[in-house]
Length: 252
Image 1 (cartoon, rainbow, N blue to C red):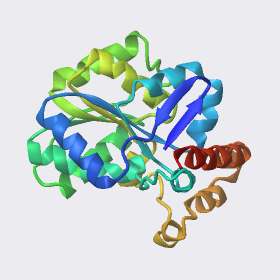
Image 2: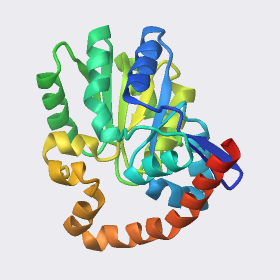
Image 3: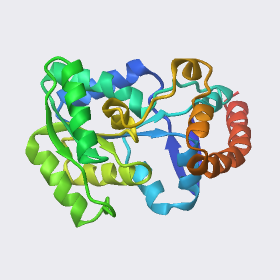
Image 4: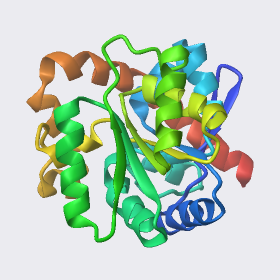
């Protein structure tokens, strides 16, 4: 699935879980870094108005579909991809890291969340070592001197897989900066993924996930914050669906 936004092309280039695991396994084995972003409708809204966000996405090596509307559009375009949210990718990727003896870093969120998430991951995944946890301060500049200092700490820790929990677009900008400062580290942007492990946020129940209604469950959980965001997403959805259909026609 390809999106054209303000002159930038964004390709959802990881079509399945098998491909994701194979590519991450290969990069870690070769000691090559990467940046992975998980695109959703909220990102598409932000990408329309933020040039730095578009530049950050251009620096991502891998992009997955985070949200059923992206999956639906891919099917409509005749280029189907699987749903791969950042939060759901954490455990499969740390298992790969543990198997290869690769240290993991957690960056973002808060100190208590990082500590609780690290404890959970090391308990659940045999041989996993979380070697670095950094919670940047409020107002953290994801591409300035502060970011460089954090990235140097990540690199010095020996970590070669780093989960970034800062929210969009800051986490993607940080990952793009990381590709320059710590080129041997793989950066994975995961939003609130660590909060689920720490128990500070609740994941949508299984029934909501199976019915592809996670968005509705989250909306009722926090309507004041998410209502305006989802309205903006709803407004851009028809246009993207039309463009997806046109992609299929061109392909045909």
